[in-house]
Image 1 (cartoon, one colour):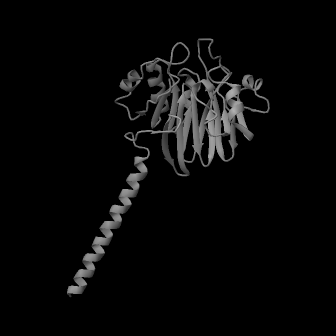
Image 2: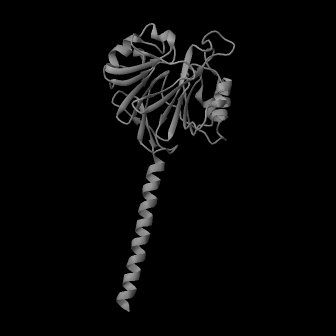
Image 3: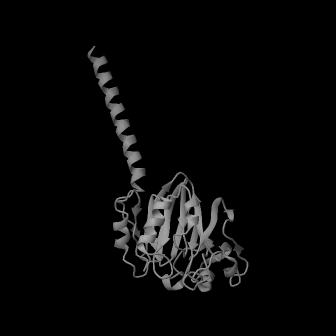
Length: 259
């Protein structure tokens, strides 16, 4: 009887241990996307965030201004690479490059030449293609799948200003496993944002007179409803205003060193 009693106790202890181990593993996964998780600093001094997806980690490198780098599934994706924002001779070569529009703080052919490989694919607007031979043109509404990565070009413009005319620039929505990432480009809080669904991460620009005020970004974020919001392209705009505006929402605001 005693031996039977000890066996029962042992089984109960094993069950508790396994349950605790499973909880620990689940906690470790969710902690990767936790608001308390600080970015890692790369060798080049850039802040790098890691987000879990059901197809592996997505690494997000905040380079500067409107310039970003994604690493997913063994592929390196550069967004609006500009040499004044980083030393591209020390950054990974691109499998894919996306350009939102033709302005000099977004389209830099020198940066493109440094990071492109023989088989690098470059997606951009029609106007940008005039300066980048051999590229792939995407217009608002176009959807392409490159090496298994789904990319959608969406509108990015100023409704009443001439800085970014409607139809000329792109924002991009990337599907990384079960996570959709919206990089807005230079835009205001336009009506088309209501059509964006299931966005997990949003990069929204915030600087007048070219894009949005903190109030406009907050309004856009409440329409898009991302889990995580990165303000970018913010220049001297006070990002604390945006944090304050969204403090009572379910949106996590992550401010990174971009300007």
